[in-house]
Image 1 (tube, rainbow, N blue to C red):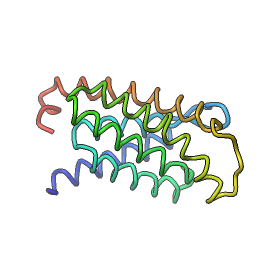
Image 2: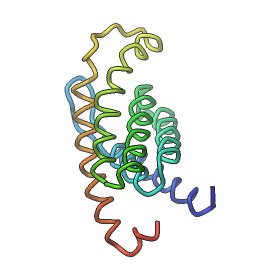
Image 3: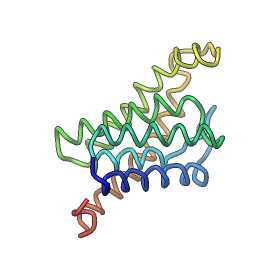
Length: 161
């Protein structure tokens, strides 16, 4: 992994962390942080699934340490980033990456969050408890990320990434 790629990854982590501190809105029982999902889509498109997962992981650690995230940031961010990267690699379409983020975070991660929350924080909630807030957050962020990634692909700087 080259220095340029690591620098871009660090920049995307910084955007996700800062964006999470400033951009959020209520989504049922939780808060939606769409910037994380937008970064997942952009990193999946420009860097691929493994760097996207790494960015989501580092972002989750920093958000937890700074108090702007919970332990649920791990399954949500990483599964969405992985599926976004895989779908983009297979199709070459930005909206496939956005769909991967929505399915990965909004559906798969929300269902995996139930036993994860039970083990880590002693929560006993139903299977679909996390689904509405995870979906609201991931859909809004994935749309933002897809629009930005599409625009960047048509810009000279974005084509060089």
